[in-house]
Length: 248
Image (cartoon, one colour):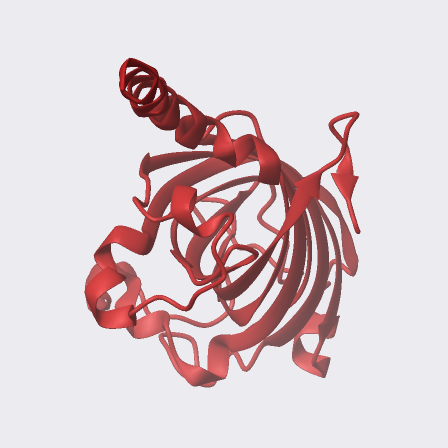
């Protein structure tokens, strides 16, 4: 009897500690994302007096798509280090806005490597049990307990190439270049299974140039900005004996 009570007490004391360390078994995560891009440059758009919060500039004409891949490493349960590679198209046109008579149009293809840090200010309550359990969860009853919310920022680079219409080329379009960008944003993920998460991420990039659309004017007061809205899928990789990801 005494032995049974002792075993129960040991299990009671060690289980919370073990659950708190289960994330170490899945320290590496591979993430893929795809979604629309929104570009705010010097071509297109309405003037600030006609455009509260810039909402009128978010139109189908200015929207293109991007795709990205990420490799994450969990420094702790709340903090991730993330290597991100993104290819995207950015588009700008004067067809709608305050400069329709100018008729400029540009499409920018861009490749962006970035190193990011993520902080999870709300962590799910289901991860520990799901790491070693393969039963499907009840989505409605477990939704709130299975969500993560995080913020991210970091530093990146952007290699870009601009293709403009005849009017823009005649004005002296810049063909492309390389610049630094400062990313930042918010995201949420849903713990779907021991190995898979689904998520949504909204991220912006502040470029240290005003030429992503190949053009700047004397009226420009800020550098170019673009945004991503990504739907993401995460696959969790087991941690190998030397701390590297295991593909077994």
